[in-house]
Image 1 (cartoon, helix red, strand yellow):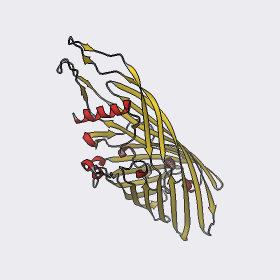
Image 2: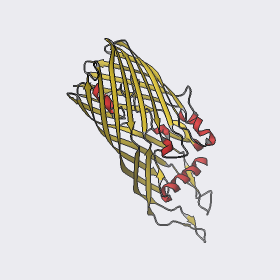
Image 3: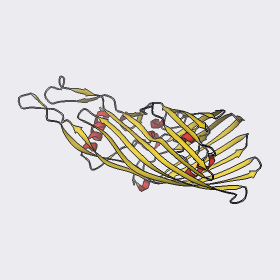
Image 4: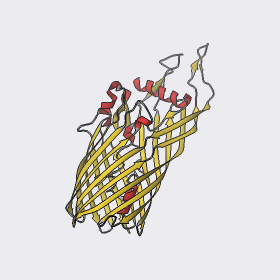
Length: 384
């Protein structure tokens, strides 16, 4: 009954409000930088270049192409009123990237799923006033939301600035497609609307000794606002006439004003590498949610991992990542329920020019009830 009530509120909001919110649960934004080395915006796989610091394109010295697939466990309770969440369209790659270096310039085109979730609302029931036992209508509601990001990136590397160091700058512009499908007993729509964003990054790398390297990266991601209007087919719920007959009104259409908003963010990354031995990664970021919604506090995320190089062809990593979404008013203890801490593990295996990238993240050990899940990711890349 609680799910049905919440669903009715969602549908009513979508059809009759000035603007309805899409992509609003944080579970749909799941570790876009996850790879076999950990979670870093400057040390990553070519398949993830839609999400990395664009200045880190300079780390790719040859033409490379890669893609990844991602699996996540279903969360039976991901929001209030026992609403669940799961990923959809798992046959579509999570990310795709192609990078082309030309002297000190690098160019890249890429795609990733910035958001992916369908709400699990359970079976709904509608009653008509004639005879509650005989005229109950059961239905399986569906709200599916994916945001695809298509991007073009470029970077330029300044060598020996200062000596034995490199300084890179990079820029990325993205086209984001909000694709949402709603199917309710009395309303349905398939929406596709677009919005643009951009990012800018800097990366400084230096040789501390002959086999020790240090890299520092700073990365700005612009806010994203996707707004648009779509048409919903609307069939009014039948009602009981004066003589006891069920009366069906003619179906019609209603305008739905959709919006998905994300704040601007700043990210700092550090890598320390002992060549052919190990690599340490650390990152911290802040997303300025309070600029969009006064009821949400700014969000801080951080992660760290250590990779051990077994040999030139095989690397293993372990690490962690922590995030939260904190509301000013902590109703039904929602802030605690949305805290998440992932344990991560990964491996990168290289055979000639083919690289196999495996990664895993588990949040069951120390997370809120709404964020306990498992994520598995497989990436394949080829160097030409």
